[in-house]
Amino acid sequence: MLYPNLPTDYTPAPLECRPTGGFSTRLRILASAAWWAVCRLNTTVQILWLNELDIFAAPSAIVFDVGALPYWFQIYDAPFLPHSGWLTARQILSTDDMAFYTSLMQKKPLRIVAGVQIAPNDATFWECLTMFTPAAPIVEAINTAFGQIIGRTLVGVHYRKGAATQSPQAAFWTAMAAAIDANPGVLFYIASDDPAFVGSAQLLFPGHTTVGFTQPKDANNPEGNEQAAIDFFALAQTTQIFGSAGSGFGQLAAYYGGISYIEILA
Picture 1: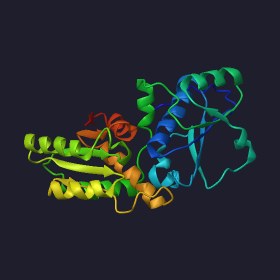
Picture 2 (picture 1 turned 180 degrees about the vertical axis):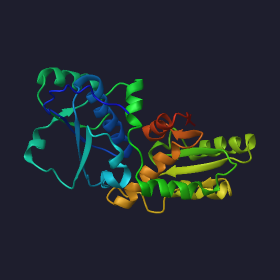
Picture 3 (picture 1 turned 60 degrees about the vertical axis):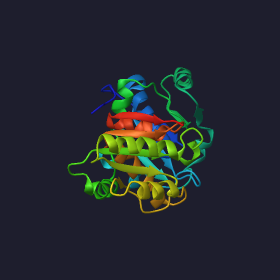
């Protein structure tokens, strides 16, 4: 497991970070914060996990096994900003922006808000990414969805409704049919924010699909938010992922799982 190089006389001057956005965006930011602690700051990390209406309302403990995180990385759930100091937190927009702010602040505590990945895509970032493992209910839901997998090849399918112009449903049907022709035993794990896509996949490929969610993906519903984590960690356990153009969700799951990613285009 990764650790920052904390000196023996270390006086806490932590990196405080508030991630914003949906599940995969927040995961990128968590890994980014860990990267800065390990590679540049030699400090501890404190994450303020704020429930954001219309974006992501699930507490961190619902989706992550927070007890498995190293001592130097802590996540605090909050339904609202805990104090006014967060109102003046630095908005970080890029890795270069973070580097500049770090230089500006010297060894003072850093309190930042980030809505994008702010660390480079190097080996340490991907190692930091795998620090974050699913909570027990997420693992249970995935095991239930994968109950049919014995002796079968599992392929992930991530369809994002907003990417339909670049990655239409018909293009996914073509790729999935070709996969079945090549391997009649293939089983598709379907992850999508479009119930119509899921229903069509089940009708078109009977016996070849499975899903891991039962609740609507409502940004204000913690149970619906939980489904994003189920889909992410399930996709990461497949052999490859067919994904929508313009969406980083499936691509990040492929990186997390160390598997191939195929962007489905019209």
